[in-house]
Amino acid sequence: MLNEFLIALMAAVIGYVYARILIQPEHILGPFWAWLKRKLTRHDYYPEIRELPEEIARLKGKEYESVRVDETREHWLLKPLGGCELCTAGQLCLWIFLYHWLILKLYLQFNSIFEAILNMIFTICLAILLTRLLALLVERLSR
Image 1 (cartoon, rainbow, N blue to C red):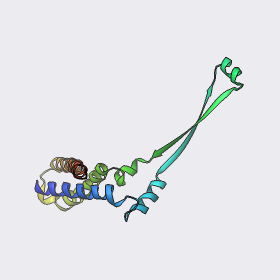
Image 2: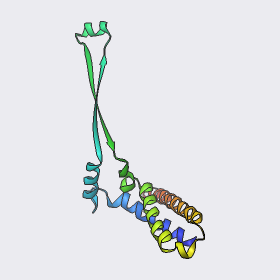
Image 3: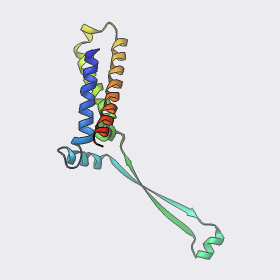
Image 4: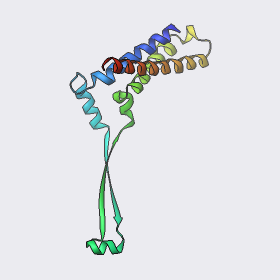
């Protein structure tokens, strides 16, 4: 139980520091994050053509009103890669847990794969909860 808490705490701290501090434009990973965001962001253009009623169109001297809607869509991978500290901490905790428990200690620690999966889910949820609590603590202390 202590190991799961330490893994979750480690993932929470690393996820928060990475997502909220290190990838900001003025910090060391800022250029990498800007490049990644440029590569994973799509710009979609949806021209919408709406017809005006005939009487209004005649009064205004127009037949159609064309509106261009520019929509920017961020790729779903941006969140776990640093766009959201909760997602980053959860992903980090998942991979640390999988490496630490399922590869290194599966044969020694667990009696069943079901117990391993339950421990993994608990540890990931604990990491996300600790990240949220850390974010609230930093927000409250910065006021």
